[in-house]
Each structure stands twice: as structure tokens, then as C-alpha cells.
Amino acid sequence: MTQSTLNSVKFKISPNGVEFEASGDSSFIEREREKFNEMIPPITRVIPLIKTEKETFPQLIENTQTFGTLSANKEQSINYVNFAHYLKEKGFNTISDKVIAAAYYISEIKGITNFTRDDIITELKTAKVPALTNISDVIARCIKKAFINENNEKIDNKRSFCIVQPGIEYCLSYVPKEDTSKKTSKIAKNKSTKDYPSLNVTVDDLHMEKYCNITELTKVDEQLWVLIYMYTKETEFQSFTRKELQKIMKEKFNLSLTDKQVRRFFEQSGTSVDKTMIGKEQAIRLLQGGFKKAEEIINNNNRI
Image (tube, rainbow, N blue to C red; front, side):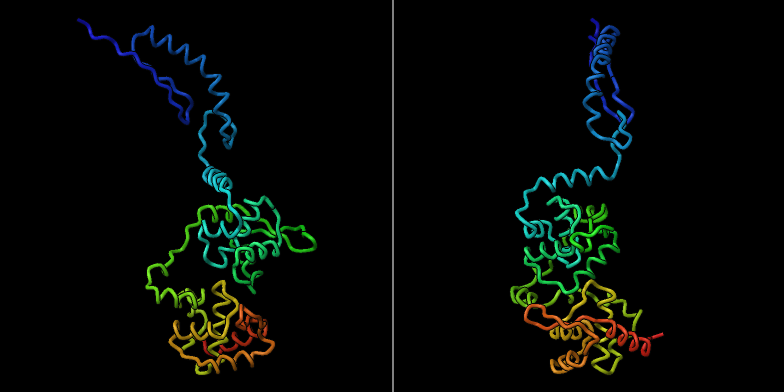
């Protein structure tokens, strides 16, 4: 009694091409090989629909852009109601992230390749994002990070921009920062809603060693000039209200400033700052004179 021969055939698509594997008696293998050779032309007409860098078959796609393209197609297939819906779904939670997200939304979802600062402001406004007094500074940071490019051509005599690949990939792969407020008690959560995003900045983020030690300054106005200067240079935050400055000083440096002291600083800052309103609170942002004042204080009190 002889053992029957097991006949089998396999097709395998690999980076080296379409491979034929068969086992069994010689007549079976030869017959299946002929069928395989007849099948190759139809297969090669279908598979090249998958674009490759060299447009050749059967090389497989080994390009990091493939993931981005597939992710972009998936994202574009989601029917976002508006920019607010997009922000909520993706979880962008810092000012810079929301600005680059607006650029992505305008370009990649709405299909408007070139856009202006006003277009970004409009999207942020529709999403109920608090008005920014430093939007141009944030855009400049996005340009510095190579997320956005400024075009040579203007739109209605206004500067125009476009999002570039690093910015697109940043938005596609964005992972929201952990929301620690969900881990706090109800009382703590209610309190946090009254705080300011600038309080999320740590003292280490300010790189105080490059400037001077605020806690060693004896005058309140000098402390405030240097504080605002460091925040402006090292973070995305540019404008500050009186209460916000008081909170930062207390929580980050254990310095208790009275409302009267901070109000007097606002009144005496003159043309060295730009005064605006954030909601119902007055805020200030450093102008050239303010930068000069802060730099003088830092130079006179530098640790080195």
C-alpha cells in the first residue's frame, strides 16, 4: 500500500514579486505552473493601482508617507460638523495646537490650500475659542516649527499661508495631553475652571537660569517685568491679566502680590505695553519699551 501524494499550490506576493509554490507529482506541478503563468498578466494589471515611489511592480510600498496618506483619507472621510467638532474629536487643548489645527482644518478638510490670518481667527471664533491678542506670534511659532509656510502671494493684500507636511503629520498623529482635571474632586475642578492656561507652565519651562531669579528681586515692578518677559520668550503666552499675574507669582514663586500692587504696575507701564481686554479683564502685552526694561533688569541682576 502506497501513500498518496499530497498536491498543493500557493501564491505569495512579496517585495521580490509574485512567487509560485507547489508540491505533488510532476504532472500536477507542471499543470499548475502553466495556470500560474496565465494568471500573472491580469494580476500585474490590478496590483500597480497601489502607487509606489518608482511606479514599478512588484516592489511593495515602503514609504513613511503611506501612513499619513491613509490617515488623511480616513480623517477626510469623517463628517465633521464644523471646526468646533474637529477640535473636540481630536482634543487639541493648547493655543498653538488650536492654531495649527485651524490651519489643518481649513486646508485639508475644507480644501482651501491658501489662507490668511483672518481665516484662522474665523475658525477659532466659530469654535468659541477665546479671542487671542497674540495670534500673529503663535502663527510665527508655527512657521518656525515648519508647520506652516508663508506664501509669496497675498490674498486681498493680506499675508497668506499654507500648511506643510510636518504640520499635517502633527495634526494626524496628535495625542491629546492628559486632562488631569478629571482626576480631581468636584471642588478642585470648579476651581480649575477659574485658573489660566499659563499656570500649566512649570518653572523649569521658563529656563530662569538664562535670565535672573525673580525671588531675589526686591521691587514688585521688576519682578513683573521679568516674569512677563520670560513667559513671552519661553512660552506661547504673551498677554496677561492682573489676576493671572498674581496667581503665577503665588503658585510658581511663592510671592504674594496684592491687587493694588499689580494694578499700579498696569497703570505705570505706560507705552511699554499694549493694553487689551480678555473677556472682562484688562491684559497687557510687552512692546519694545517693555522688552528693553526687562532686559535692563535682567542684565543688572543676572546670576552669572
